[in-house]
Length: 84
Image 1: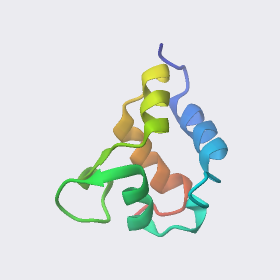
Image 2: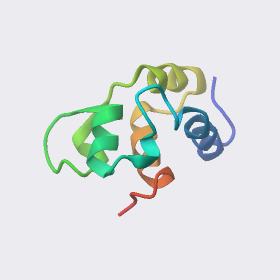
Image 3: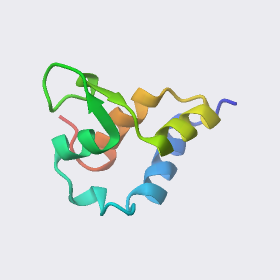
């Protein structure tokens, strides 16, 4: 299934997921947020491209919407105010 508005879908996802059981992602810095949602691969620890998404909720939502998992990492930085 593909959604018509990927940005709105990711926004809605993070509105629902922001206060998760591990604490509020809104209080995490850029690196903490990326490490929370993904696994560091290599490169700059502050860049989404240096991580592979491994969050189970992102994985399920990506599968259900057709939005690539990595797009959620990039969008998370924007959603939580860490966009460079």
